[in-house]
Image (cartoon, rainbow, N blue to C red):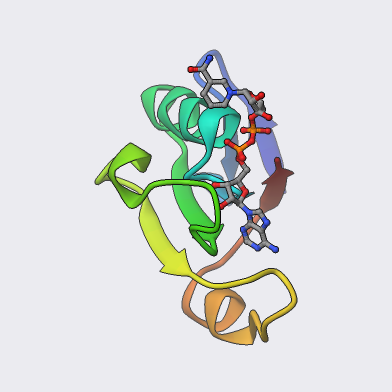
Amino acid sequence: MFLITKLGVLIRGKMATILVTGGAGFIGSVAVKTLLSNGYSVVVVDNLSKGKKDLVDSKAKFYELDLVDDLSKVFEENKIDAERPV
Ligand SMILES: NC(=O)c1ccc[n+]([C@@H]2O[C@H](COP(=O)([O-])OP(=O)(O)OC[C@H]3O[C@@H](n4cnc5c(N)ncnc54)[C@H](O)[C@@H]3O)[C@@H](O)[C@H]2O)c1
């Protein structure tokens, strides 16, 4: 069950966790900051082929992985509610 609030989406009473792929890039890093400032939990997957780890807000959980890699660890370790691909 989810509830849309002024700040964002509550899922089972907790702010949603969003997976941002390409989150170390130009657009992705801004998306990460915006999601965090709106109360979401954020998980980033980026292979750093073009992005920079320094651009990823330290409050986000970061995985240096390629999207063709096995992402099962990311989904095992985090309850992902939505994805924001870049
Ligand atoms: N104005 C500026 O200062 C500035 C700076 C950077 C980029 N730009 C422009 O903005 C445009 C859009 O930026 P963007 O955010 O779409 O591009 P981006 O290249 O900045 O971000 C894409 C991200 O996806 C990651 N990525 C790519 N393939 C991946 C894969 N297979 N697995 C995991 N991660 C992967 C890259 O490492 C990168 O971090 C750029 O093309 C560029 O023209 C502008």
